[in-house]
Length: 232
Image (cartoon, rainbow, N blue to C red; front, side, top):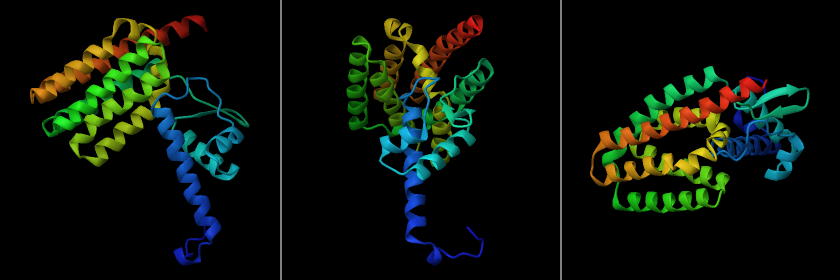
């Protein structure tokens, strides 16, 4: 678009294309953060367009934005995949998550109402059932909602957007948690401890529980990344 073009001069088709591109970007971004795709999953433009009921151009623009942000990787002229995080990237993301998600948790913990606690308990019931039934994709979907229900209590929009960017990078890798994480119930124990801390109005306890969740997950993800290196 020419820098001198005004908003009034934009055509209806330009505006519609921009809105559809934003919609496609937000949709794929949320799916990546929730672990809807495993590392290595291909995202052809045509498939994305059909899945989201948009044209090829908005789908392509959304995918290009996510490639630029590092959430997707171009491995060929027309091939885009969901990447694995290597050990260095996994370590960096984890350290940032500990600092930022811990901060969001502690800042918002005292704002938890009875309704919030009830919501978290209901989410945890769904997660536990999904783990028991080996529906790991469903567990990951609800796991993100559990975490961000707590993080949103901090009411710090820039902090939340940074945390969301980290989940965009690591979301697909969460598939490596299973089945070990499900069998040992690490996440279940940590989530229940976080809920207990919210009920007790103890921000430090809630932060510790959520940080333990991140650390436990990191140990499993690190092990999986190391095993991949040995197979190469």
